[in-house]
Length: 256
Image (cartoon, rainbow, N blue to C red):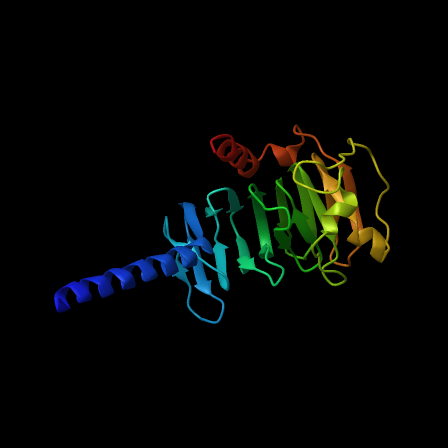
């Protein structure tokens, strides 16, 4: 009888532990590609450790790639984030459930180039990538964010739409997407403006910063002083789109 009770108790513990492990791993990102010298660390620790294939990171980690290195993180088996050589990111939030019940994911790019292919978001979930001077939030989108040494930040959107704002002025909240979508919100229902040339460098108002929607094959470059350096359409044939980094990402996306 005691042995039977012990087995029942062990089984109950194993089930509970399995549930806790499943819940924990649901909030992790997995390295599904590692090439070269890629390291990770928890933010409060001093020492970096090698990021191995199939190892994990969670909220509070930093990830860094060095020269001639790159990495891919897969999130929830449906979205990926890739780091170009010489890139450092902070994992600020990862599938973190808010008080309103939706999931928040937030990456901060300190330097370098990050490529995101995002799928499977719930209607109120948020996926945000920021630099010191630019915040981006997307819904089912492929895009990249490049942060130069001086802080100049470039956003290029390949598919879908990205909402752009000054992170020093605004934080997106529930219902924000409904203001710019067709039919009251929802994935894949954005009113996309075709490529067109726009004005050169100029100062923008707070309202312009906060409510700017960047759509497929559009870009915006913002200088370290917060001024828009360039914005408008870009072409798949321009030199920046012929780099090994971009072509590799497109190949990886096509194979997903």
